[in-house]
Image (cartoon, rainbow, N blue to C red):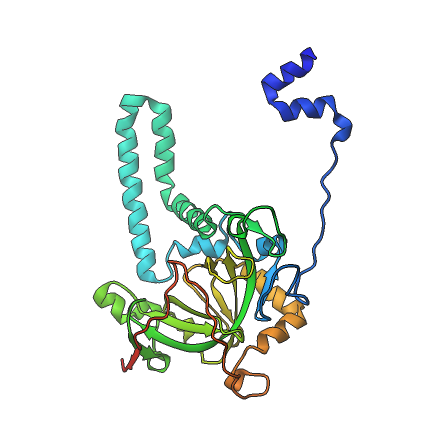
Length: 338
C-alpha cells in the first residue's frame, strides 16, 4: 500500500494501477478497415452516391493536417517570382532586426536567452513557413477530431467532431473574376496567354485574378470555390468530373464545415490555394479503385459524360455554407470581355 501511494503521488493514478495490476494491461489491437467505396451508405448515414463517406483511417491518409508536407511548406515560399522576392525580403528584414534586438537583450537578460532568440530570428526564413503551414493545418480542423460517419455516440451528432466524405461532382461553370465578391466574370478563353508571373491585375492593384468554379453533383448539391488564377487552370472546361474531400459536422453532410482543394483529372490540375490533400495518395486511390473511378466518371456531363450527352436536371438541394465559402448570390453575374 505504501508503494502504491508513492506511485500515485509521483506518476498519477494510471501508473499506480498499471503497477498493481500488470496482468490487466493488454496490447492495442490494430483493426484494418476497408475503404467504404462499394457501400457508401453505411449504418445511419444517408448520402447520395456523389458522397462517399470515409473512415478516420482513410481521412488521415488522404489529408495533410498535421506536420506540413513539402507542397504546403513551398506554398508559403511563394508561387511566383514576385511572391518569392517579397518572402526573401521579409525574411531578411526580420532576421536583421531580430538578431540586432537579441544583441541588446543580452545586456538585460543574459546571454542564454539572447542566444536562443538570436538563433530563432537567424533561421526565421526556414522556420516561418513551417509555423504558418502548421497553423493553417490546425485551422482547417479547428481543433476538432475526425470521426467515422456511421458511428453514433451518446452525444449530439454536431458535437462529436468532423465527418469526412469524398465529394464527386462536375464543373457547371468556370470563369475568371477580379475578387471573390465580383459579379463581373471573364471567360477562360480570354486568358490563353495568362501566366502568374505576368498577372496584369496584380501589377496594377496588388491582387491577382481569381478563378471561380461552380461544381455540383447528381443530388443537386452546389459549391462555388475561388482560387488564385494560374496557367494550370486554362484547360478547365464545363462538364469535367471533379473530386474533393469535404468535412461536415452533420452525419448526413447537410452542412459544410470545410472543403479541400479540388482535383480535375481531365484538366490534370488541382484547384485551390493550399494543398490540404495528400495528392500522391489521392492519385493512387483513383488508380487502384476502379469502382471509385467509374463513379467519378459518371459525374461528368456533356462531352465528358459516359454517353456524351448532358446529364439530367438536378434536384433542389444545396449545402449550407460556412463563412470560408461564398454563397450563390441572388444577383446575376455578368460576363464581360477582358
